[in-house]
Amino acid sequence: MNYQDVLDYIFNMKRFGDIKLGLERVSYMLERIGNPERKLKIIHVGGTAGKGSTVAMISSILKASGYKVGSYTSPHLSSYTERIVVDGEKISEDDVVSLFEFFQPIIDELVKKNNRPTFFEVTTAMAFKYFFDKKVDFAVMEVGMGGRLDATNVAKPLVSVITNIGLEHTEFLGGSLEKIAIEKAGIIKNFGILVTATQYEKVFRIFKETAREKNSKVLRLGDQFRVKKVSSSLDGQTFNVVGEDYVLNGLFTTIIGYFQLANAAAAVAAVKSLKAFGLDVPDKSYFDGFKNVRWPGRMEVMQKSPLVILDSAKDSMAMGKLAESIKGMFSGKKITLVFAVSSDKKVGMMLKEIVPLASKVIITKHSLKERAMDPSKIAEEVKKYGKEFFVMENVKDAVEKAIGDCGEDGMVLVTGSVFTVGEARERWFEEVDLRWGRELNEKNNIFR
Image (cartoon, rainbow, N blue to C red):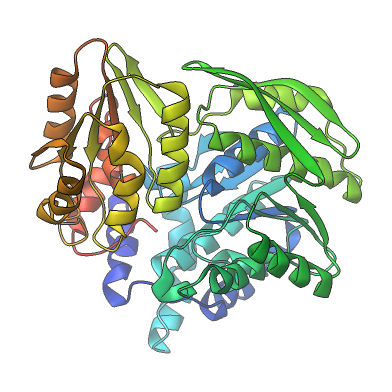
């Protein structure tokens, strides 16, 4: 098989059922190869928003300390190979092929048993094996959905991180914050450490009770550790993090957005907590790690004249945090909003957060045609705010119109979906896998 053959196969696995939560299939695949996940030092990162950013920060800090670090994230912006990374290097296409061919006989066994694994389960199993084969010192793993029944939860982490909790995937995780919190709390392990940035007391009570039952230590933002912004600009932000036995003043990251400071603090607390396992990371590694970390598509500045920012906010919680940062950093700026969203999202709640900040809205749709929300439905919501708006056929044309219309002193904000941001980035970067995958799988959400 070649790389395109593999993409064809695994992307098309979505045709046989979208999301099937549970550990049975991924456990079987890993057990058949000797359970490599049990031989890794793992940091497991869940939550509603900020998971990927936190994974990137933790990984960068550990790498700066000289450790070999595997990072597993989803979805990808542009290329499937972004999901599995070692020391900042994406997995090669050849390694993707080799890993898939290694697992294919096991996948076939499950298919014969009428228990076909999902796209995400296969990718997760491949990641665990890849990290084991590469002899990483740490694997930093992002939860795909929920936690308790997510494929990554076969891991036995040293530290579990839950960034925050919001209403998401309610058809799978439950219709209340409490029900979702119970699913997220499923990544808390016996005699482990939980780091969380949640500010909801009813959610924290669930985490705290679960941790008590698991004899797991709890570190919470605002209690055991704190963060303070010092300054921010388009080039990055400077901040301080203070814990029970450490003070890190003057940390700097090029990742902008006030909401990222909570993620940064959680990343610091997670790495600092490794001291409980005899692993002490020097302070210099935090400064170097934050300075070098990159996480595309999250308040990413694509150009400065006119200013264009892309952000993958995909729900009302993430949109609210984005809006808070936009108001704080760009007050008085004339903003042209480019917005496209998937059809399963609560678009009214998302638009309520961001449309009041815009002077003009350009509504469009991403190219996953069966997944994208009809622009006319978005328009009905935008009308409520009395804003000037236009409808464009695709993201690329919408971005060009926004840049052409906003003027040198204006600002373009592109948001609503990781799919939207991935397509917008094609204006500045050549992308291959995402575009090819879209054409092949228009009717399926392949990017979980």
